Length: 73
Image 1 (cartoon, rainbow, N blue to C red):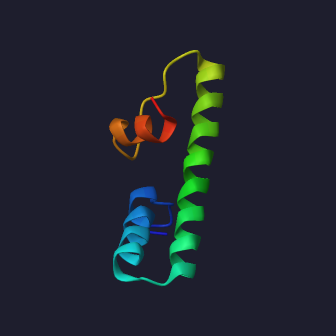
Image 2 (cartoon, helix red, strand yellow):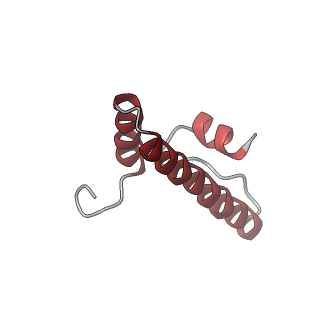
């Protein structure tokens, strides 16, 4: 947490640093599962937001390109 709020890009940067600095397969596996879970949650939230609003989701904290890649768009 930074400033009392969840900061998704900050957490991704931590994961990136861990991935870049370790060859420990257990840590890499955990990071991979956390990233996959984050992508799955984003996908579920976006799908529900779009179903409720009828509008295409617009990225708030990460780039639209990253969101679109996560969602397979």
